[in-house]
Image (tube, rainbow, N blue to C red; front, side):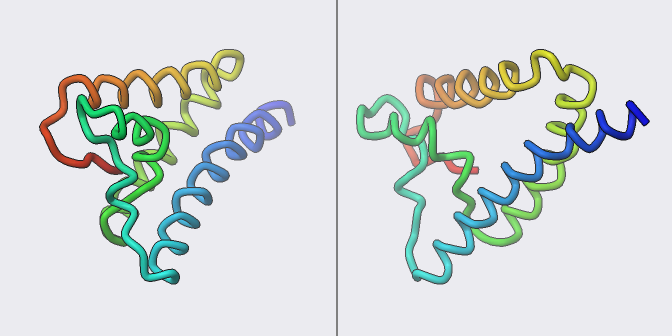
Amino acid sequence: MEEKRKFIHSLIFPLLFLLLIWLVKFFEITMEMDFVQGGILPRKINGLLGVITAPLIHADWKHLVDNSIPTFLLSLALFYFYRDISYRIFFLIYFIGNILVWIIGRDAFHIG
């Protein structure tokens, strides 16, 4: 019973995060907008906002689906096996990875 509750708890954040990125894509499509400029633009001050927004933006549905499966599985494993530190690790990976892209990425918008 405890393992089942632990597993269900581990599903919550990964599913909410996936719901968020799918809603962003749905909103982008239905409003006929292009969010690529919300990505990371390396070494530009206006590209720093992308450190927060870039992982939520995807070029097309295939890009979104291709990222959703590993994101879900890896975050599920993180929240299941490292429950006590999972949020801290998730956000460290989220921000450190994106800051590194901002520092060393090529001069173009980076999304997804």
